[in-house]
Length: 155
Image (cartoon, rainbow, N blue to C red; front, side, top):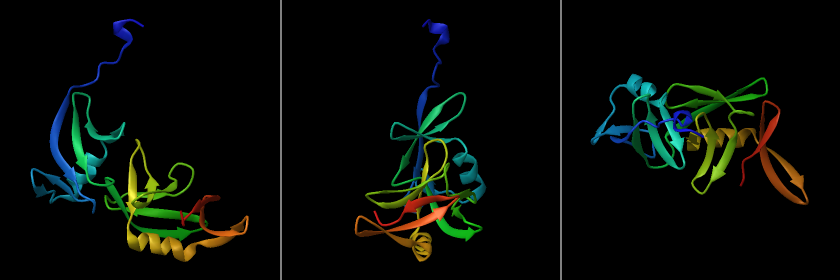
């Protein structure tokens, strides 16, 4: 491969932006006061190899993230589809593109560009209200279904 075919990455910088475990965005110790600004920055946020970056055509800036960058603050269910409402005003339908999962800190929903949102406690409890128990091999497990896919809640 010649040098012309290699894509040149923009330079890396430090944005001095931090996202706390509650999904609040901070810059140099001051919380973002305008939700519109958080939504704007969320459109260029990426996860790359465990690092969070704001990526533009001219630069890539690091972002410190305490847990996950977004919070699913609520969920609703209609016509066999569970929709998660995010703290940035977006909604995602849980299903093949936006799966549910667990890590050592709890449940999350997959978003876009490698990003995930932590489910808030109220959102998780609402999912638990909709869960159905199945018995596989004698042991019970709890699942919710959205877009025809089952997602285990009790991992």
